[in-house]
Length: 375
Image (cartoon, rainbow, N blue to C red; front, side, top):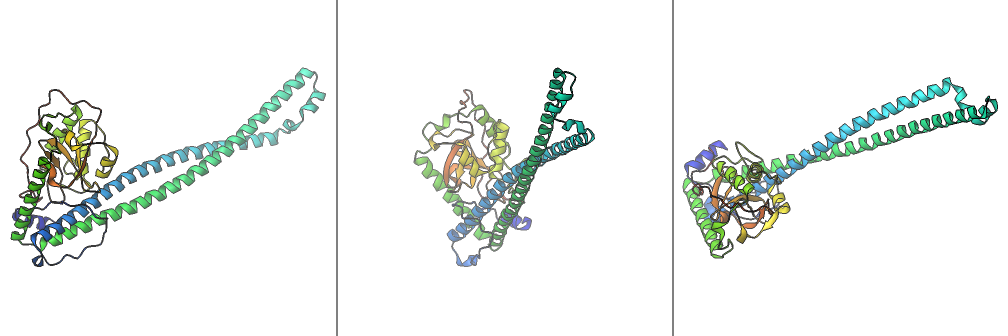
């Protein structure tokens, strides 16, 4: 896409994804000729394609996480299976030794009653019987260990085969998700290649107007609360904010977790990792597993989640702004919180107290759709 993106940058415009995601469909959509559509229709087409690409990316990320976990389970089962098979081999060796001893020493089979009759004293006979009983118990224990070892090895072998099958299934799903991302990006490339510089400029202006209007409505609604400018983050949240802001200007890359490039949830995860808190990898899991907070109580470091299916996420930095990795073809940037339709917000460290001496970092300028394409 490098030639396309160069043309895109020279036109001075890039268009954001602003609408809710659709189901993952790796089949390309037919796009009508651009000259037959209005700027609004073009913008909606690009928004849909970007949204679908991001949903496919988050599906890929989730599958990658599952696959990594499944690989660990397979490795653990294989280690346990190897240990169980070694124990079973030891059990078979012990059973073989007992069998040889029994064959070589048939006197062990003489009954304790006969030994009592032949013994020189009753005490000696009782001692002999005790020895025989202990030998019999040892044989029974050896056989039990052998049986249990074989049973355990067989059960682990079955579990390992099932786990490997699940791993192979996840690998296929990952391939499908990766193909879905590539299909969406190819559609974006085709549509952008069909546009003139004037059309790209018109799309950029339309996007900026839409974002500005959405931000004004959000602020006017009071959803952000009246005391928001003075709200401080936790110590970990402050570190997460500093990390995320240092990534401004780095390129978006689907599936990327840094340090050279990021996708949206890769950026938020790494920021909080730098802050000292482990959070889930994908935007859907961040939305599902972290504590939700109302927008009126947002503090820097909180995560703002977008779209009905939680397919985009940004890190709140204060002053009604977020830092995020918007989409393919852009760089990490600071944007108004209403740059996309807000689903809600979550807090990775809800029990942490805000710092008392927080000094907000100087925020870089809000960048929109101009001059931010990846060359």
